[in-house]
Image (cartoon, rainbow, N blue to C red):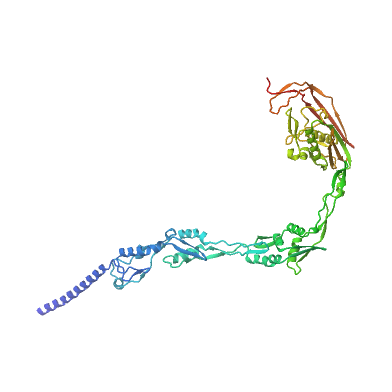
Length: 563
């Protein structure tokens, strides 16, 4: 029994010794794991930065020191020949160091992990963050630097040389692919990141420019072009041809054209014999009567399609354009001038003038000279102020007596109211249609009462319309005692004009005038009203019209204020 008891003790002791050893080993293992729980595996790196054996906090500090500049520095971007840069933190891009180190430390009994921590770890990939929407927006902001507009071509002549600027293609960034390229390559990129683009073509291809350049422009200025019209010739030099040329770029095509008028002008300068101007027939007063000066036809060259003929000649061996000689008709032919019917006297009218006022007489002669020979076409309105204007000293007029606001005064053109009276009367008595006129405020007995007209440029005009169906020519002249006016044309109407007796007479009175240019007057003649009645007859047609006017009396004028 004793041996059995002793034998059981030895077996139990063996178990106890083995269990103790396991406990010791386990405790040692656990202790080692505890020692390694905050240690980055030996030899571990993040983007080339050694952090093996460091605690997590020390590793994070080192990564911030080494990698933050890479994560925050500008990212260079290229698109073809264009380049720019963007800032990561403003483009939705970043480096998360905490996430990068997550799981690389901490207590573990995993023998593989413990073995790595003791013997060394692999390279650790940095954890990068990105916001696609923010990066898209950043790429769009780069378009002004990366996109490139297509350059349109240009072609023109400089002197006699073709100046051609070739069109070039542009580009536009493909935003989605650009975002992907940047996300995949931005961190630590040693070279600029190339982003893809698509081509933007110019509206008009180079081939369109070069076709016109080679087939039309260069041949045009390759030498002189001769223009032949029967036995007449003219030479157009390259610079003259270039001056007439222009280019149009539209709808993807280029065309060259030549200005017809410019070519014709240069042609006639090169040989003036190629043209003689047609001359209109003229109706003039000769020996006191109207006479027709016959029209003259012009002779020249037919420049129709001259531009196309020169373009064709420029590509031919002879470089010669042939055109026809043409005859140009005058606008007013001799036959048309005869049909105007300026052939007989319609009416003549004269009034005396005060010969003692020599300055006033100068104005009468100046006015008559501007009216003599004036032709009023059928249906046209004759305006006296337009015919005499401008009434200035520079135009030959002088300062003389006028009636202004009922008082005597002086003004440039004084006396021209007598010319107005003359023209009104030949219009009235010749059957013309009265358009506008205004009698004097007081009557001058050298004029027919109620049948006279004053004039003031810009305010009072005298005008009548030629309703005879033929042209009317004015003849005006001044003798030593009278102003004379005559109308020539074809008489249409038989005209009678009757003037009433003077009625509603008013006596003169004394008035005061404190104007600086006051002219005193003795007064005397009474004022009155008067009527004028006209009848015009042409076959079965009878036209009647009347005039009415009231004249002021010739008051006594005292210069100064009324006492």
